Amino acid sequence: MTEDVRAPDVKPPPERLYGRQRGHPLRPRQERLLEEALPRLRFPLEKAGTPKLGFGKEPAQIWFEVGFGGGEHSYAQHNAHPDVGYIASEVFHNGLCSLLTRLVPVEEEATAPIPDMLRLWDDDARILLKAMPEASVDRLFLMFPDPWPKAKHAKRRFVHPHNVELVARVLKSGAVWRVASDDPTYQAWVEEVMGAQPYFDAPHP
Ligand SMILES: C[S@@+](CC[C@H](N)C(=O)[O-])C[C@H]1O[C@@H](n2cnc3c(N)ncnc32)[C@H](O)[C@@H]1O
Image 1 (cartoon, helix red, strand yellow):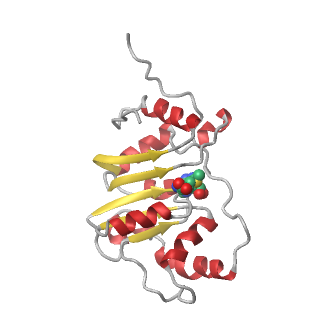
Image 2 (tube, rainbow, N blue to C red):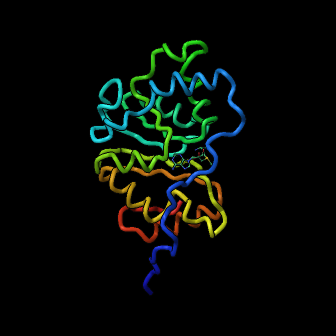
Image 3 (spheres, rainbow, N blue to C red):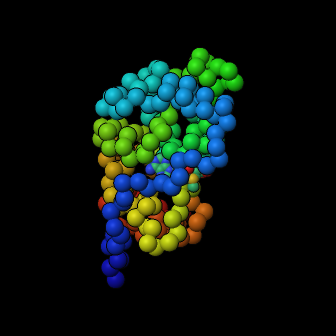
């Protein structure tokens, strides 16, 4: 019996994958974090073609996280792997502020030293991934992405045949793409999409 490995029938991803960028109104400290600290930590798009030069020190490897939420995972990975240049992407302002709060003391938003090996990307992760050279990233994390559970929203899921190709292009041969989800619909979707692509070995979870 031959296995059915057809790619799911899904529309191309839309321009915008994510929902709101703002939740609660921002407090003054949060406004300062976005206005004064974020520009100093933002990954410079002009270095996308030579991404190791986008950090304070040249990293041994580059790891990329899509949609870090409150930043707990990014922060822990960055602290645990001091040689790695970590690009953490998130579009939701409250999430960006949560991570920035850990990195920058109060009243020092414009002056506190920033970590050499951590850079933030506050726009759609796909923009930066598209601008980076092929085989330039050593590891990519997609932790508990928005599940978009309705079938009509499947095109918004980050695990999508188009994005799989995009991720495969920037990852080095042998690199790991770690996807975590506790949503059964999304888990089944990932198995379906990854079962029908030629780039990754995708073991069953
Ligand atoms: C469900 S949350 C999960 C957050 C976090 N990874 C966690 O485990 O708690 C998904 C996050 O991905 C962000 N996101 C969605 N699409 C994105 C994209 N294309 N680029 C960057 N961030 C994105 C959303 O803003 C949202 O905060």
